[in-house]
Picture 1 (cartoon, helix red, strand yellow):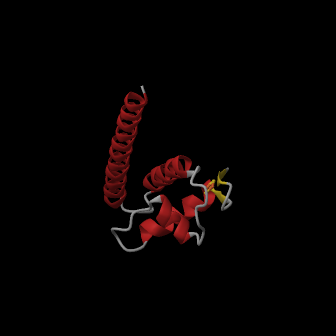
Picture 2 (spheres, rainbow, N blue to C red):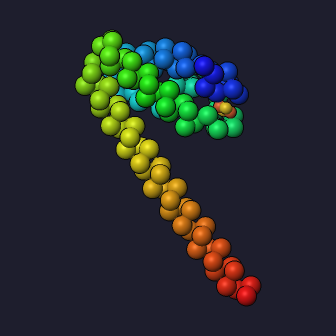
Length: 111
Ligand code: FES
């Protein structure tokens, strides 16, 4: 299945990349940016980011089942990825709240 149509990356490419990244030095997280760099590709429109994250998690699940990578390293990487995602969501909520507040102030000023 094609995950990124801009860079033409499949879920199989992501599987291989995550496996290679997790087998390299410990501490490297398979974030979408790291996976794309590993595949020597660049994101363009970034619309595939959520699907890429899902494909990365699915690849990590498969690696865990096949025990090709230390399960503790996988669990730690997943926990760090979840924290990064939570931080990104909090930041986005804060930005959305600021935009809503500015819009409300602008509307009040016009009225
Ligand atoms: S669909 Fe992946 S960068 Fe555009």
